[in-house]
Length: 210
Image 1 (cartoon, rainbow, N blue to C red):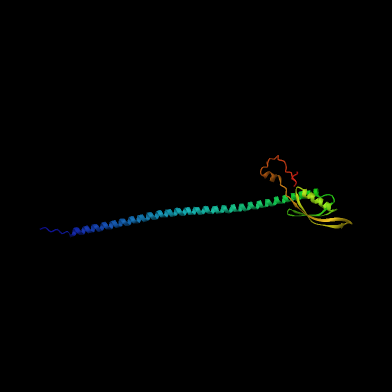
Image 2: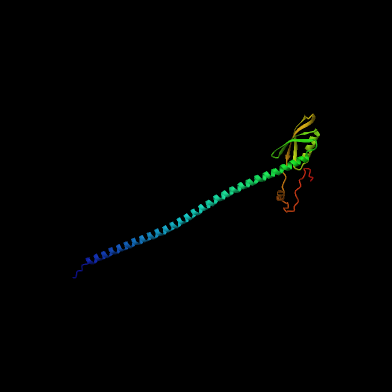
Protein backbone atom coordinates (compact mmCIF):
# COMPACT_ATOMS: atom_id res chain seq x y z
CA UNK A 1 0.00 0.00 0.00
CA UNK A 2 1.37 3.37 -1.05
CA UNK A 3 1.13 6.28 1.40
CA UNK A 4 1.16 9.94 0.16
CA UNK A 5 2.05 12.83 2.48
CA UNK A 6 -0.37 15.67 1.68
CA UNK A 7 0.86 18.07 4.39
CA UNK A 8 3.24 20.07 2.14
CA UNK A 9 0.57 20.40 -0.52
CA UNK A 10 -1.99 21.69 1.97
CA UNK A 11 0.54 24.08 3.43
CA UNK A 12 1.22 25.48 -0.04
CA UNK A 13 -2.53 25.96 -0.63
CA UNK A 14 -2.87 27.82 2.64
CA UNK A 15 0.11 29.96 1.78
CA UNK A 16 -1.31 30.68 -1.68
CA UNK A 17 -4.68 31.60 -0.17
CA UNK A 18 -3.00 33.92 2.35
CA UNK A 19 -1.04 35.61 -0.39
CA UNK A 20 -4.18 35.93 -2.49
CA UNK A 21 -6.01 37.43 0.50
CA UNK A 22 -3.21 39.89 1.17
CA UNK A 23 -3.10 40.81 -2.48
CA UNK A 24 -6.86 41.35 -2.60
CA UNK A 25 -6.73 43.33 0.65
CA UNK A 26 -3.95 45.52 -0.72
CA UNK A 27 -5.85 46.01 -3.95
CA UNK A 28 -8.96 46.97 -2.00
CA UNK A 29 -6.97 49.46 0.05
CA UNK A 30 -5.47 50.93 -3.10
CA UNK A 31 -8.91 51.18 -4.72
CA UNK A 32 -10.37 52.72 -1.55
CA UNK A 33 -7.52 55.25 -1.42
CA UNK A 34 -7.95 56.04 -5.10
CA UNK A 35 -11.71 56.52 -4.66
CA UNK A 36 -11.13 58.74 -1.61
CA UNK A 37 -8.56 60.81 -3.50
CA UNK A 38 -10.82 61.21 -6.51
CA UNK A 39 -13.77 62.17 -4.29
CA UNK A 40 -11.65 64.61 -2.31
CA UNK A 41 -10.31 66.16 -5.52
CA UNK A 42 -13.79 66.50 -7.05
CA UNK A 43 -15.25 67.97 -3.88
CA UNK A 44 -12.37 70.43 -3.58
CA UNK A 45 -12.94 71.39 -7.20
CA UNK A 46 -16.62 72.04 -6.52
CA UNK A 47 -15.79 73.99 -3.37
CA UNK A 48 -13.17 76.07 -5.16
CA UNK A 49 -15.58 76.77 -8.01
CA UNK A 50 -18.32 77.81 -5.56
CA UNK A 51 -15.90 79.97 -3.60
CA UNK A 52 -14.90 81.66 -6.85
CA UNK A 53 -18.56 82.29 -7.66
CA UNK A 54 -19.17 83.63 -4.15
CA UNK A 55 -16.17 85.95 -4.45
CA UNK A 56 -17.43 87.18 -7.84
CA UNK A 57 -20.92 87.76 -6.41
CA UNK A 58 -19.48 89.66 -3.43
CA UNK A 59 -17.46 91.82 -5.79
CA UNK A 60 -20.48 92.55 -7.98
CA UNK A 61 -22.63 93.24 -4.92
CA UNK A 62 -20.02 95.73 -3.70
CA UNK A 63 -20.10 97.43 -7.12
CA UNK A 64 -23.91 97.53 -7.05
CA UNK A 65 -23.91 98.95 -3.51
CA UNK A 66 -21.55 101.68 -4.67
CA UNK A 67 -23.77 102.44 -7.65
CA UNK A 68 -26.84 102.51 -5.40
CA UNK A 69 -25.10 105.01 -3.11
CA UNK A 70 -24.24 107.16 -6.12
CA UNK A 71 -27.85 106.96 -7.35
CA UNK A 72 -29.08 108.02 -3.88
CA UNK A 73 -26.69 110.96 -3.92
CA UNK A 74 -27.84 111.95 -7.41
CA UNK A 75 -31.47 111.63 -6.30
CA UNK A 76 -30.82 113.85 -3.29
CA UNK A 77 -29.05 116.41 -5.50
CA UNK A 78 -31.95 116.28 -7.98
CA UNK A 79 -34.50 116.80 -5.21
CA UNK A 80 -32.45 119.70 -3.83
CA UNK A 81 -32.26 121.30 -7.30
CA UNK A 82 -36.00 120.82 -7.83
CA UNK A 83 -36.68 122.38 -4.44
CA UNK A 84 -34.51 125.37 -5.31
CA UNK A 85 -36.24 125.64 -8.67
CA UNK A 86 -39.65 125.66 -6.99
CA UNK A 87 -38.48 128.35 -4.55
CA UNK A 88 -37.16 130.50 -7.40
CA UNK A 89 -40.36 130.02 -9.41
CA UNK A 90 -42.42 130.87 -6.32
CA UNK A 91 -40.39 134.04 -5.74
CA UNK A 92 -40.75 135.06 -9.37
CA UNK A 93 -44.49 134.35 -9.28
CA UNK A 94 -44.89 136.30 -6.03
CA UNK A 95 -42.99 139.24 -7.49
CA UNK A 96 -45.20 139.26 -10.58
CA UNK A 97 -48.34 138.83 -8.48
CA UNK A 98 -47.34 141.74 -6.23
CA UNK A 99 -46.92 144.06 -9.20
CA UNK A 100 -50.21 142.84 -10.65
CA UNK A 101 -51.93 143.34 -7.28
CA UNK A 102 -50.76 146.96 -6.91
CA UNK A 103 -51.78 147.72 -10.50
CA UNK A 104 -55.22 146.27 -9.82
CA UNK A 105 -55.59 148.23 -6.58
CA UNK A 106 -54.63 151.43 -8.40
CA UNK A 107 -57.38 150.76 -10.96
CA UNK A 108 -60.07 149.84 -8.45
CA UNK A 109 -59.57 152.57 -5.81
CA UNK A 110 -62.08 155.32 -6.61
CA UNK A 111 -61.45 159.02 -6.29
CA UNK A 112 -61.94 160.27 -2.75
CA UNK A 113 -60.26 157.18 -1.24
CA UNK A 114 -56.63 157.24 -0.12
CA UNK A 115 -54.76 154.14 0.98
CA UNK A 116 -52.33 154.53 3.87
CA UNK A 117 -51.02 150.96 4.01
CA UNK A 118 -51.30 147.67 2.16
CA UNK A 119 -50.27 144.44 3.92
CA UNK A 120 -50.31 140.95 2.44
CA UNK A 121 -50.33 137.67 4.39
CA UNK A 122 -50.61 134.75 2.01
CA UNK A 123 -53.57 135.49 -0.25
CA UNK A 124 -55.18 137.92 2.22
CA UNK A 125 -54.59 141.64 1.71
CA UNK A 126 -55.34 144.16 4.47
CA UNK A 127 -56.07 147.70 3.32
CA UNK A 128 -56.04 150.74 5.58
CA UNK A 129 -56.97 154.16 4.28
CA UNK A 130 -59.09 157.28 4.39
CA UNK A 131 -62.33 157.96 2.53
CA UNK A 132 -64.31 161.14 2.10
CA UNK A 133 -67.55 159.33 2.94
CA UNK A 134 -69.10 155.95 3.65
CA UNK A 135 -70.35 155.90 0.05
CA UNK A 136 -66.74 155.98 -1.18
CA UNK A 137 -65.95 152.96 1.00
CA UNK A 138 -68.96 151.12 -0.45
CA UNK A 139 -67.82 151.98 -3.98
CA UNK A 140 -64.37 150.63 -3.20
CA UNK A 141 -65.88 147.36 -1.92
CA UNK A 142 -68.02 146.99 -5.07
CA UNK A 143 -65.00 147.66 -7.29
CA UNK A 144 -62.93 145.08 -5.43
CA UNK A 145 -65.74 142.53 -5.65
CA UNK A 146 -65.98 143.09 -9.42
CA UNK A 147 -62.21 142.79 -9.89
CA UNK A 148 -60.98 139.67 -11.76
CA UNK A 149 -58.17 139.11 -9.25
CA UNK A 150 -59.56 140.53 -5.99
CA UNK A 151 -62.40 138.86 -4.17
CA UNK A 152 -64.48 138.82 -0.97
CA UNK A 153 -63.91 142.34 0.40
CA UNK A 154 -64.61 142.46 4.15
CA UNK A 155 -64.88 145.74 6.04
CA UNK A 156 -63.17 145.20 9.39
CA UNK A 157 -63.51 148.70 10.88
CA UNK A 158 -64.56 152.21 9.91
CA UNK A 159 -64.49 155.29 12.11
CA UNK A 160 -64.74 159.04 11.72
CA UNK A 161 -61.50 161.01 12.09
CA UNK A 162 -60.43 164.61 11.56
CA UNK A 163 -57.45 165.24 9.32
CA UNK A 164 -56.34 168.83 8.60
CA UNK A 165 -59.72 170.07 9.88
CA UNK A 166 -61.46 167.74 7.44
CA UNK A 167 -63.84 165.03 8.55
CA UNK A 168 -62.89 161.73 6.95
CA UNK A 169 -63.56 158.04 7.47
CA UNK A 170 -60.65 155.85 8.55
CA UNK A 171 -61.31 152.27 7.41
CA UNK A 172 -59.64 148.86 7.55
CA UNK A 173 -60.62 146.27 4.97
CA UNK A 174 -59.55 142.73 4.03
CA UNK A 175 -59.72 141.32 0.53
CA UNK A 176 -58.63 138.04 -1.03
CA UNK A 177 -56.12 138.00 -3.88
CA UNK A 178 -56.71 135.33 -6.55
CA UNK A 179 -53.60 133.97 -8.25
CA UNK A 180 -53.72 134.25 -12.05
CA UNK A 181 -52.77 131.34 -14.29
CA UNK A 182 -49.82 131.77 -16.60
CA UNK A 183 -49.87 130.90 -20.31
CA UNK A 184 -47.95 127.68 -19.62
CA UNK A 185 -50.47 126.62 -16.96
CA UNK A 186 -53.38 127.41 -19.25
CA UNK A 187 -51.80 125.39 -22.09
CA UNK A 188 -51.34 122.45 -19.69
CA UNK A 189 -55.06 122.33 -18.92
CA UNK A 190 -57.03 119.46 -20.58
CA UNK A 191 -58.61 120.46 -23.86
CA UNK A 192 -56.42 123.55 -24.29
CA UNK A 193 -54.34 123.93 -27.43
CA UNK A 194 -50.66 124.48 -26.68
CA UNK A 195 -49.70 126.08 -30.00
CA UNK A 196 -47.45 129.11 -30.06
CA UNK A 197 -50.16 131.19 -31.72
CA UNK A 198 -52.73 130.57 -28.99
CA UNK A 199 -54.33 133.70 -27.61
CA UNK A 200 -53.37 134.91 -24.13
CA UNK A 201 -55.87 134.01 -21.39
CA UNK A 202 -58.25 136.80 -20.51
CA UNK A 203 -59.29 137.09 -16.83
CA UNK A 204 -63.00 136.43 -16.34
CA UNK A 205 -65.09 138.50 -13.97
CA UNK A 206 -67.21 136.83 -11.31
CA UNK A 207 -70.41 137.72 -13.17
CA UNK A 208 -69.21 135.74 -16.22
CA UNK A 209 -68.37 138.81 -18.32
CA UNK A 210 -64.88 139.18 -19.85
